[in-house]
Amino acid sequence: MNRHTTSSFMAPSAPRKRTTMTIRPEYLADAKRLGITVSEAAERGLRDAIREAEAARWLQENGEAVAAANDWVEANGLPLADRRLF
Image (tube, rainbow, N blue to C red; front, side, top):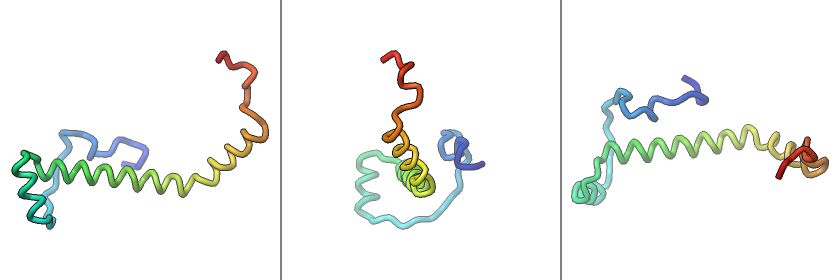
C-alpha cells in the first residue's frame, strides 16, 4: 500500500497489533475517569501525526514546483481566465 491509497489505519475494522507503550500515570487516570479508550486515543493521535508528517514531506518534495506554478500564474494570469463564468 502506498501513500496515495487508503491506509489500513483509516479503516475501523482493520486488524490491530498489540504493542507496549509508556504513558504518564496521571494521563491514564484521567482517561479512565473520563471514559476515554487509551488505544483509540493513541491511534487517533498517531494517525494525525502521520498525516502531518506526510503533508510536511509532500510540501518539502513539491514546494519548489508549487512556487514555480504560483509564480507563472502571477506573471501570466490564469489559463483560460477569459472563459470563467464567475
